[in-house]
Image 1 (cartoon, helix red, strand yellow):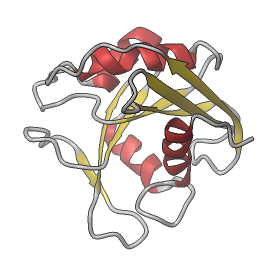
Image 2: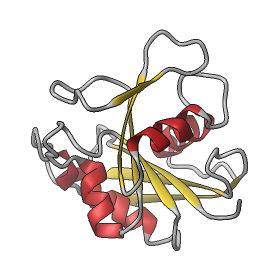
Image 3: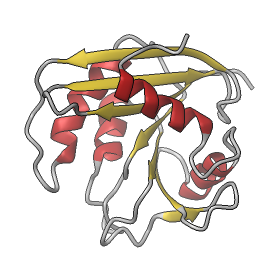
Length: 170
């Protein structure tokens, strides 16, 4: 199964700005990473509860501009914040980039009762999966099957590290 699959994360250093990282794989399980991109933004919007996407989306936009087309994108967070469809970062990314988006959150968000709990690697704590442009059950299945034996799939651990260090792994 060929294609290009991306996972993105953004880190906000204490000094200000943001660092966005993107990991691209040749398969939806992210067993073969074929590229990484890291972009630093000097300034970002301030954090506003309920409008996190305003801060995160410009950094995601900047790193995706280097990547070329993707078959789907995984974001760190929620696609929709509640069962009524209040948009989170993933919904805004889906609307802007016209690509299916899978949201993988490490913690439960109050009101996100629609998120599918996915347990990996024998972990007691689940990941919370939401999706747009792909059936949520299929998105959960993909996250469950991603490479790596830990709670967090290897690609998500890598993109987190890249965003925090600002350095490419390859």
